[in-house]
Length: 87
Image 1 (spheres, rainbow, N blue to C red):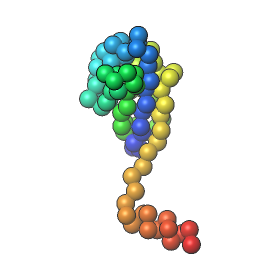
Image 2: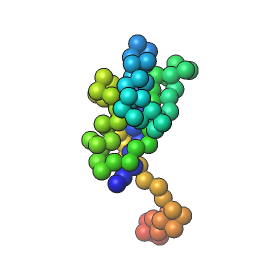
Image 3: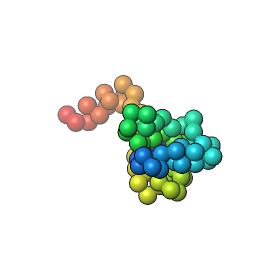
Image 4: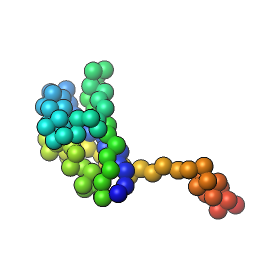
């Protein structure tokens, strides 16, 4: 499984419905929200087999606006190796 960063923008009028639907789908604890400060967006780190599967964490109401980004973690050793390969 890979990790994906989900960015789920929505409008102010969609806000309560979007959060309620995320809760109903069981993903509420995965998301963090910017809505109280006017940044109507939810962000989550999701483990999934692929981007399409990760996108299922976003309610269909706002799924078309969502962005899915595969993400990785680097170790210090991996960074050293990348520098060595560059030279």
